[in-house]
Length: 501
Image (cartoon, rainbow, N blue to C red; front, side, top):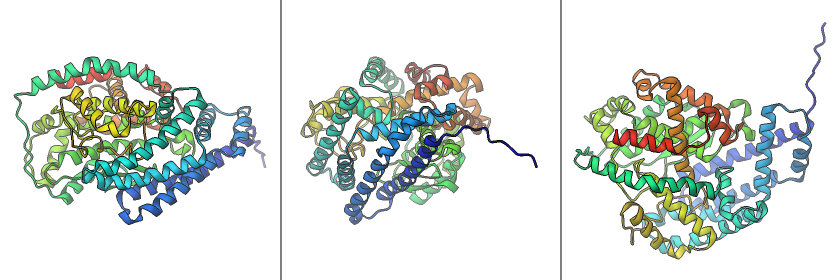
């Protein structure tokens, strides 16, 4: 019998690391499902014990990510004969270790517990426009987040807010964002006015509800199936704030329904399905390893916004959606009317309901508020006045006294996720850049949808974004996919093309 020689050189330290991070991923699996359950299923009375349990789990994961043995193996593995992909995984392991090691475990536990308590209370406080009740909780969350930012910033020798940005968008800085958003502030306000003038005399689509919630749910599931969502590895539920959670093998998305307007829930589902397709498309061979995770939240948001804006608001997609709406809801809307409805620019109060032209204004406001929270120039007590002033300046809207639809509308600050909001506008920019690059190879996206080639579009996304996981840095990923790093000019080009012709 011939003997097959094993010529692979040993990598003992790297092998120990992969086993360790696989263990971490198992705990993070249940952490993700605990988050989903708390938002979608858990009764209000379960919050205190859930907060304690999740804080304990967060502390355990933190301990695993900061163990002394982990540090030793990370150092030794650098000298082992690793493949290019293994070195990328090692880079991501080191990043996770460094990020976790910056913050003491007791702060991680305290912040997690406070975030769960604040978020649970926020659900009722927002309904009741209870700013005074929410303010006390938010003060506590912001204080802990500011402490975290200071600790991270000092350890990395970077500004505190940069340290928070790096949790969600590795490599991003306040200076880069300010430069990018400076361009937005230059061309976006006049563009909004041009579009509003163009649409001023166009008829509006009237939605004559009620629209049965169960029928909307059935419609949403059919749209998800059309977009390629794998129901064997995911589900759709209801929550007060739409989101995508879970893990790649068990993706949980949620939306919220309105009996008088089906359009928001459906496009919310399209948006969250974009997140879900990305998660379901992450490289299976790297599951349980840092290299198998999503690249960044900006890239994650690019996939949801590609689905919602580049696909969902495309006239060709709405031509596919129109008969499904008629079937499930009994509505006789033309595809042309739907297209006008979904591209109607209307400055409004609510970020998640904003059109894609005015949406970046909501992010500019939050970006300025977050920076001011962290550097101490904005106190929580002064947030409502700051909010109303910015909304007036950016969109001509007054929010005085309307906390529910003003500074209390988002879940992010309630759970201490400062630094996340810029990812939404970065995502819109990445999505537009991907679309124009895709069209150079495949042709116009509208023609692809009309020709029934949605799978071709998703295959391009899979090959260029999803299947890469975190094997590449964000700049490397965009350079390989589109030939250049982030270029915000593509978003302006997309908006002018769609809204001004």
